[in-house]
Image: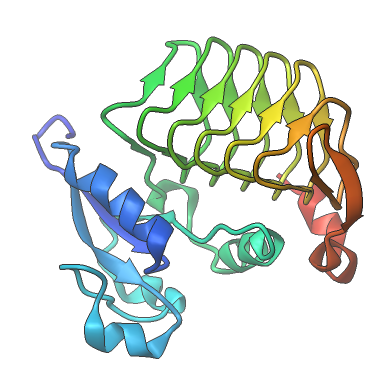
Length: 232
């Protein structure tokens, strides 16, 4: 809450499974109040998401009260690049983004967060970890010291990263994946669930297995204008 005791009013972008997870974290935070969701699926507006309304499409954020703030729940292995571009295209001001930290998360005092960040249940962030804007640690994620995670990276449940890892923008790390210390995972890369990463993963690559190996290229990375990822 702010100095007047007013709770943060939160709108979640995307009324799906990850949105429900984020909603649960918001509901357990006495300093936040969940207002509802925005989603481009028109059918969801009529049925809502759980007990909360879907207020309209993503673009309708402009019509909402200026004190309401937003957090994205739009993440996925195959679509993370597209979601990143979509969220950027909305042009929501920096001061309208909320950070949502689950009550059960453990974060060192030296952790730095961008805006629009979600840190999920039972996640641990060790000293000097850095998370960029719109990152999501989706639950039970362990990130060791001095790891830098760039913009719009999602780590699914139970990902484990050793110290000094660097992850590029719009990458997606699948559930139960493990990353060895001081490795580099390139922007827009996809690491499959359960993978054991023991060498660097080039940008735009898809890596799976134990030990992991590159098996393909993220087609969205090939199709999009990748220079967008060099912007702040």
